[in-house]
Amino acid sequence: MRWVTSEDVPRSGELRVPAGAIFTPSARELAEARAIRIIELREGQPAPASAPEKIVALGADHGGFRLKESLKPLLAGLGLEARDIGVYDEKPADYPDIAQKVAEAVARGEARRGVIIDGAGIGSSIAANKVSGIRAALCYDRASARNSREHNDSNVLTLGARLLTASQAEEVLRTWLETPFAGGRHTARVEKITRIEQQYSRVAQALPDGRGAVGDGRGAVTERRASASGVASLIDHTLLRPEATRADIVKLCGEARQYGFATVCINPYWVPLAASELAGTAVKVCTVAGFPLGATSTEAKVAEAAAALRAGAREIDMVINVGALRGGDFDTVKLDVQAVARVCHDAGAIVKVILETALLDDAQKTAACGLAQAAGADFVKTSTGFGPAGATVQDIVLMRHAVGPRMGVKAAGGIRTLDDFRAMVAAGASRVGASASVKIVEAAGK
Image 1 (cartoon, one colour):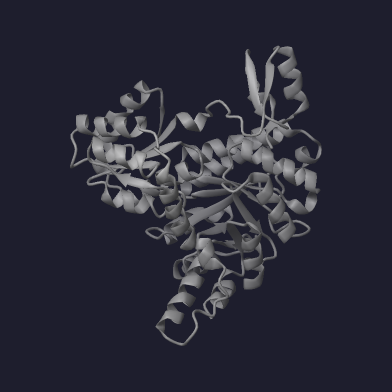
Image 2 (spheres, rainbow, N blue to C red):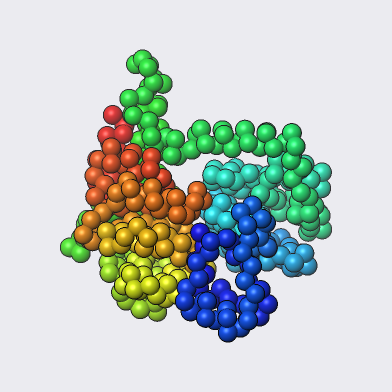
């Protein structure tokens, strides 16, 4: 399902939409006023190239910065847009950070392909391939670039700035971009790669019963630890109570370091402290905007998000304009999310949209998911934890169905036990927000 708002309506010509697309009243009126020809695409009918098809996520560490800059004209000449993920100068930077950002942009569908450059290209390839859905290939000549596309359907290219001249890198990049996947017998092999990835994915680790393998050998201990680690990696360790003190936040960050949670989710005031406490770790800082009511202005939400990002936040959970949604003002809802998503993505951060599902009926929940997705959000999230009720399995199933398999779904509110956690993940949640995080992870390790 796709929601079409007035912002989607071109000034002239035609507008192609999926069959069953829903137009807001203002979008329909604007399309009629501009005499736009609306074409509904049948199921399976190819749509015109979307913006991400023309986007290449481009990133480099300090060692690859100059080569990154030299490759931008080539991309422009091929009619592609280089979305520069960083770095933006030659100050020392860690290649895993850049590789992760580029890979995540491709995995989320924001860019069709990604290119990462470091000194040798090896480390970036290893790091990028840890992101689900990524097939990163280190290529060093036209033959390897062609093979990686024809046989492996690679979607991320890594290059070694110390191993290639600028002209050699251009040849490799051009070949890689212009070579299609051969399909045929190679399709089955790529599918096997995907199955391996799924077998060892974080979600697969999060679902075991925690008892480990049969027997009492060391293998059982290893499996239990893997299960606990998998659970922790899906949790936003949350403390949003207004009475939280500095000592509480320091303790929260210490637990996040110890257990390896995905993020700490805190109020904006505490972002600088958390960023300092978690510096040098894989744990990200998540904070909130428009919290907990969502009824503030878009400008305020954008300013709040931008300030938090400058202070070190890497994820923003914003509250949707619930009143506008319930009143059918879908344009306002979409533009509100879109504005916050833009400032987050410009900073290399992600945005989750809190629906406060307890205040919505199923049709409104579905509409909210569609609008958040159309606005470019990375996740939809059930609840603030301050509303009349929290996450339910039924809502997670509905939300996952509404957004499809690629967008994130976060369950939050009232998740207190390992059984609660497993139920949400089994229903389709890819992230869980909880304040009982330590209790949940320790139960998974028993």
